[in-house]
Length: 94
Image 1 (cartoon, helix red, strand yellow):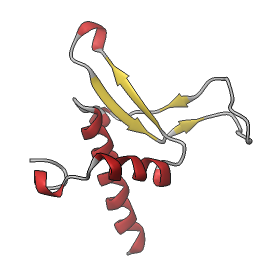
Image 2 (cartoon, rainbow, N blue to C red):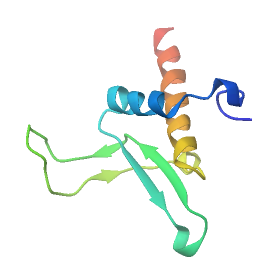
Image 3 (spheres, helix red, strand yellow):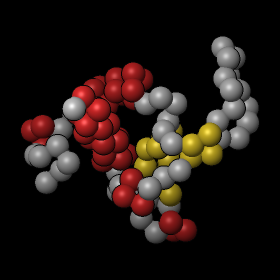
Image 4 (cartoon, helix red, strand yellow):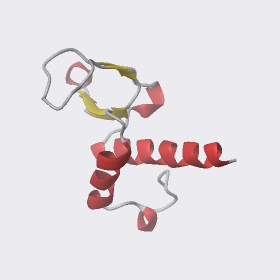
């Protein structure tokens, strides 16, 4: 069982990438190998970054990742972020 209900409802990789381009608000995808343990993935848009203009920057970015954001695959991490985004959008409309 996934956050989207079942596998038939899962977004395609193209839909995931389109969502990241349109709705990620400067977020980042992170991985953590847990010092040799199983690889985990997370997506976060919470944090601080330098002011960006049209040129690529070199610098330091700081992101906050909630414990529940860590998932065993990159797809699950993006799906989790998409689910949270759409749930939040529904909450904002009420």
